[in-house]
Length: 364
Image 1 (cartoon, helix red, strand yellow):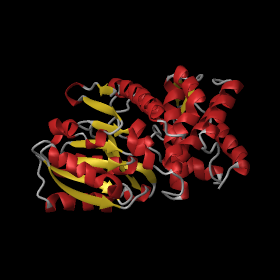
Image 2 (spheres, helix red, strand yellow):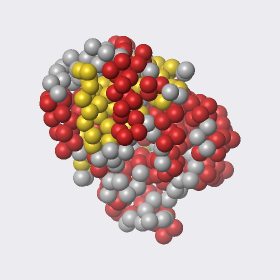
Image 3 (tube, one colour):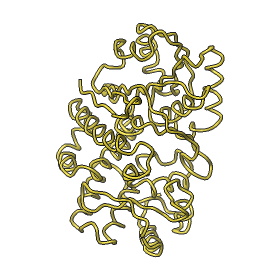
Image 4 (tube, one colour):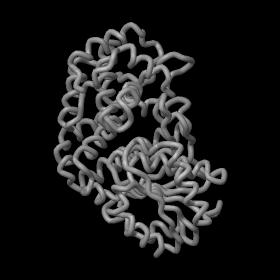
């Protein structure tokens, strides 16, 4: 069973990766044994895995209470933070308690944020059940809910006690969600590891076929790459910004179309294709590399263009994104496959021209 460690001093934690881990009481016992624990899940995941997790936690010595939220991006809201807090208070879970997030990135972000603010902060454990959450959102301690004006605008850095990534849970994942998760896998390869990109080009069909060994390898490699970045820059003051490759455009797509119309991974995939094109026009990415990137995204069954939105609307949405610096847009651009760098010197005119050019051939 691969174990990746996120090295953050006293906040360090393990990421356990393998098949069948969800039921392993021995993994939970050192984390929540003897605690009162709130399980946060959604209406899709809880019927599949909620009872199994509750049994494993009980066997680990925890007393549990479960709170469910609706599935989908719209669940990342203040009302559901209040619902989680109300459930914790009703179950008399105090500062010596903990939360366990069972689900995808939405549940992980919501539960992590609730854990960060409940009674000024309680511990939590991530049990991600989607590919996107296993390779990205469950790792690194970024927690948040959405605002009508922008995605993830209300949040906190709050590292989990551990991440338990059971790749067997991916077998019940809807096909669209699996493909959306591949966007974050591709992102890690494109920004940090040219060899992993080559591996993906050779193995993307195995991932789509849900071969466990291929999935475990991809999850482990993404976690290794992200753990290294987080250890070097926990609060996104420098290097960690490269993990936002594709997200400046992607978040604009999600906000502009209404949360949930596009899955996060779908929006990021289109955002990566746009950012790669922008990299090419800025002279840092070759035409051959751009073609490889577009081909890999398409082979994963993901979009390479965003929805039809006015170019000025894209720009407006990007300007209120967290990644804007002093009112100036910051883009993560590629300097070849496997190398990325944040840039604040991209001419606005070039961005607008690119968006206007792409709009007529974009899908809805």
